[in-house]
Image (cartoon, rainbow, N blue to C red; front, side, top):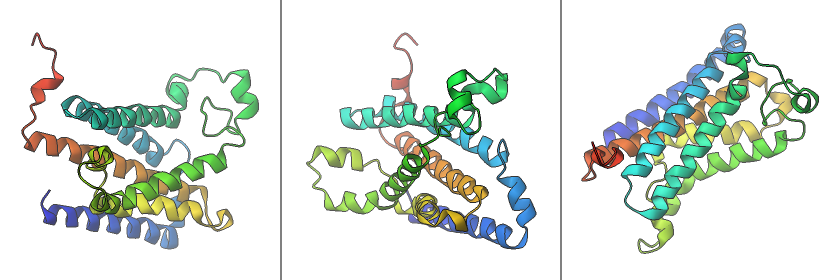
Length: 222
């Protein structure tokens, strides 16, 4: 990818952080509405994870190397899982009743795992881990020998242009929870979903520009 495009992505990401920060400081009532449950940020996250899952699946079909293909399939499963979690597995769309287990153990009485009592710390750790990996893996890539199979996977990691999108969730989740509002976590999750979606899209674009053919994802009889 040309350096100018990477710089543009990085600058737009930085502007996005400033935009939400400025809204939080100067237009907090709007900031609250933006990050409410079932709000635009939450549905945007679900959409971006669905898109990331689609892009990742296509990447897995275009990839000729075994470990990289499985890596993209893992991201496909993870992205679709998170998207369904954000939508409470369709409950918010289909309006079906909450089962006894989730009514008892989910603090929002919804059909999802991430709001079950006791999962908060694990989810925070997950965001921190994914954010750190997404932020520094492009550095680790430079340190790994190209002949190692690990390099095969690292060759597909996010670049420095996505640093802001991955590092923000890390900072939000390591801060004292008393200093933050629920909307802050929604914003952090929105940035992470955006980063993952753009990452998978950039990977797809790189395949389109390379020697691999999109015909590989089509059935052989077409």
